[in-house]
Amino acid sequence: MLNMRIVFSNQTVNELVKALQKAYKAGDAKMVRRISALLGLSRGEAVIKIGNTLGVSRSIIYEWLKAFIVEGVEGLKPKWKGGRPAKLTGGQKKDLSEMIKAGPLAAGFMAGGWNSAMIQELIEGCA
Image (cartoon, rainbow, N blue to C red; front, side, top):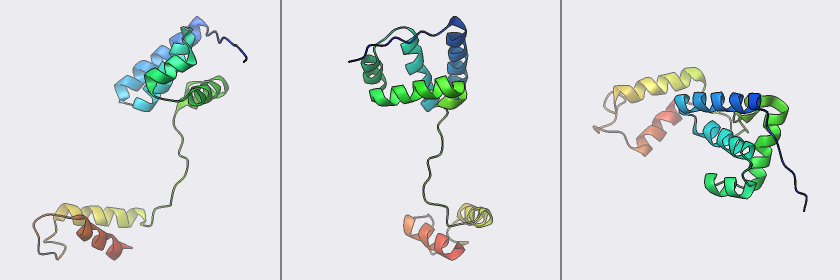
C-alpha cells in the first residue's frame, strides 16, 4: 500500500475556507461537503475517517482532490452528468405552470385540488 501525504499551502487553505463560507451562505450542501473533505485532508486527517464522517467513499474524496488540483475550487462544483432530455419546450413548461397555478377547475377538471393523474393529463395535453 502506498502512503502519501498531501500538503496544502496556507494560501490554498484560505481559499478553501473562503469557498466554504460562500457555500454555506448559498446553502450549497454538495460544495460544503466537498470543501470540508479537502480541509480535512489539509489537517492531515485520514481519508477513511473523512469518508466515514461525510458518508462518502474514499474514491469520491480522491476524485474531489483531483478535481481541485486540476481546476481549483471551480472543479469541485457538481457537473450535470446527463439524463433524459425534457419532452416539453420552455414555452410548454411556462404554459403548464400557468395552468397549474390557475387550478384544476380552470383546466376543466371537476376537483378542487390537483392529483398526479390530473397533472399527467395536463402534461400530455401540452406535449
